[in-house]
Length: 504
Image 1 (tube, one colour):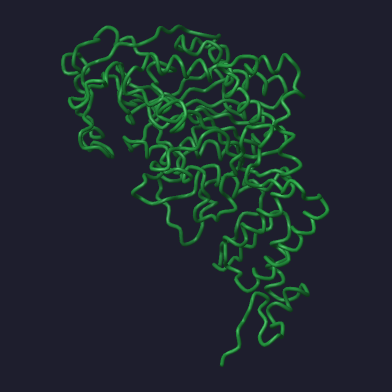
Image 2 (image 1 turned 45 degrees about the vertical axis):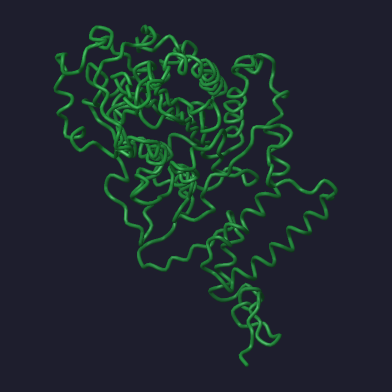
């Protein structure tokens, strides 16, 4: 009968050589375990000659320390937000073929039809007039719709990229915007995970990649939008509930646990996991578990303090709209984002409008005017407050704020022959839409790129979504190509190119 090797690597009650060396701090496994117990508890053996994992240092001098990435789920209309087109009013009710812009339908991108997940989805060709007015704002004179009055006060601190494009015409674009890949191409690390992977921690008591707000739809990528994927689960986003009473619903101690008892329990679990990690040194999930236990214990003290909004003065609470029922929920999220970067969190991912909340978020196939005016009223003041608050505290200069959405919305009105209730809305539109960035060495009052007169195609300085990724990483002092992991092939488009024209 063969001896059974157990958790401690023992054979017939004896401790094997591998565990002994690790426990005594000698030999290769001891070095691996030692590395695991250092700053981030991760052991990554450099098994491929000429490659070394990140050392937590920027590749070049950074212009920013942290990122707040605000993502609107469902697809915000660029036309009724940050790229208004008067031609839509001029030719409203006509088909695109009846206008001087009939040629937009002959684009190779349209002919390839991008990734149409629904066969019945056709190009919406009857032009839909703008559903809201707009005017120029700030010294830069950027045109913003009337639905964003508070944010309009901040345009001189913002760089608008009006030429973003993607290739997924369904909500898988939620995943594509964060990873650069369509769902059928597989799952890849999210932008927040790359930032987490490349840089050292600024605060050992908080996760370095935090997720706030409702997650994307499960059938459209779900947690893939915040997943470390092949970088390892330790680089995935950590969701926090913006709830002062229960900020850590899955990491709370039992009601009757004493702090000393809990500390002893964590130490015992850590010892077991460490010994098991020597037997299974390549188990990424185990490494992540060790780190999670250690971090969870520290978070139980630090995280609840983040949600003590009463510590903020009355002016700050009012700035974020915490005194209004309409703006309070997202105001609390934006205020939490500021408090997180203030405490040294590297990447804060904010979602708004997920499935199950706000119906289907910004996905205004019908009733765009009602949908967008209502949702904009809930997020406009908090987003503007975040920019103003960061600036007055001296944090905007070291924090990149990104506002994005999965795609824009079609210049044509949505009409579906099989559903007469769909009216007054716009369809998904990946061919050209707007993203904006502010802070962290980004120029303010800048409009970069352009769509055509109908807002159909990105026609000037076109930028695929990974150019946004590359710009964020560049401001953090990271070169995406130097973060490449052996054995994980990336396409050239995956790396993107930072947008030099918007960098100060």
